[in-house]
Image (tube, rainbow, N blue to C red; front, side):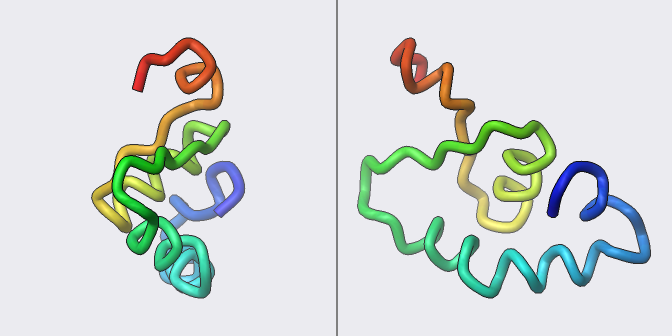
Length: 66
């Protein structure tokens, strides 16, 4: 999922499979009110795309902009 890797046509399915191994299920099953934090733009976008959950950048959590 790093950088543009997951957006490349040849890597898209692999990127989703890697996310479904642990990350996406953990995001979906998190406790109500638990923020999902990811620093990279592409990471946040792919998490949102695959789970429907909008992750925030760590700076947003520090500033309380959730």
